[in-house]
Image 1 (tube, rainbow over the protein chains, first blue to last red):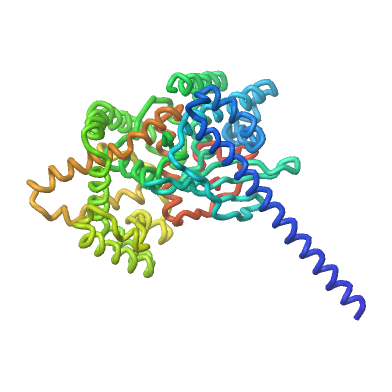
Image 2 (image 1 turned 120 degrees about the horizontal axis):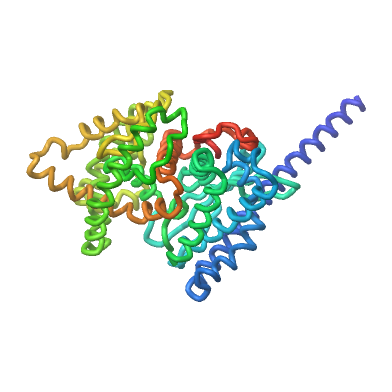
Length: 202
Length: 257
């Protein structure tokens, strides 16, 4: 009897720990996305005074903190990743980070009363999916889902899914097509051109 | 705030697919086909994409930009509401075919309310009543019934589609009441619809042009992902994530969620 009670108590403690850990993970994932959104919103509000380069500078730290660019780089280069040397990998991760900052700085270039709202957090095959909306005045909300993966004990964003379109999937298809037909140097060159064009477009 | 695939309103994203379907927005720099198993006709598809894109850039885009500059947004919104409403029978029928009875009743109510109180669909009072819009079509119905997407297709003057989705063109046309009116009425009305749809997508296609290295691939993947998303009503199952870390499934991947 005592043995059975001990077993039940152990089981209960184990389950409690599991639930607590799960809740902590979900909370951590939600916190990462909300931190990113808070910084992004500030950049949008101060958009005019910051200008394009100011928005990039403001976004780089939070992007580096909340996005796992190393993992994203592996995914978007597909099977070509394993053929890249360390220098090429570092170069690609860096330029991808720069491109992300330029993209956000270019596209979130003003504020018209938008608000970010977290509407759900769930475990998804060991990763975390944070579901959010951009609420807008006089317009339909935009659905933004973030997939987060834990690496070295830290939860960071590895994919953004906007109204059902996975940014990671799009980039993987787009980039691997270039890698396959034109090679790594061409891909890097094209991404560099994109960064410049975002700046000029401003 | 500028709109893009990350920030464009849901309807705009949906309209990108619509525009692509209706006008073949697709195209771009040609590169060597890269052997995506879901796109066995890539060579021909790219040629059609380029053809559609040249028409879009030289005809549709300039007209759409002129239309936007001349037409106030409330009028454009009302025209969008009208055309959405007149095509809503297709949604209702597919609600039924997919066995979504609650949605069927809601969408039927929405159609009735907007067609009457909403003055022929020019306004959307149903939304305020909680009857939100849904997006269903025959291709989604086939998907719900278990059909795979089949080969990706680019249709001249119609844009991205697939073996599964292509029959939806016919169904949508047959279920649109405008089809049965005198061509003297329907032709100009359809021209207005085409221009309005294209105008609604100007920002989204600007983003495509900004972001895509290979616009053909970019549009193809966006189209396929969004179809998957719609078939599963916004909650596609996905393939997981770790499978992709070691470079598996190199070409088209649809299901990282």
